[in-house]
Length: 105
Image (tube, rainbow, N blue to C red; front, side, top):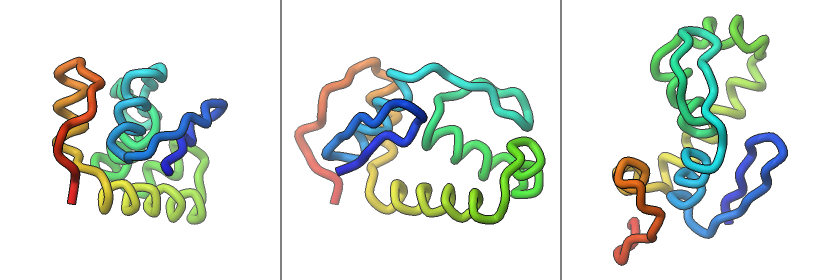
């Protein structure tokens, strides 16, 4: 079971893909504290911060520490080891929220 860790939410999903679609479509977008890009909260915000910016930039912009970095890196690892991100992007871009007939394996 996957749980949405966006503050105040707590929604749960059986599949990581469903949780990512939830985060991208059911929550307000936020502005990156480093560059100002507006993007979905949760996984997508973490991925953006770590792919586009240095850890030092993240620490300064979000008043974070090494534990914050490790926690978010573990979230990225868990999701990226489980989720079919191509499916997630297709569902978000297509506007559909239906589950696919195949499974990620």
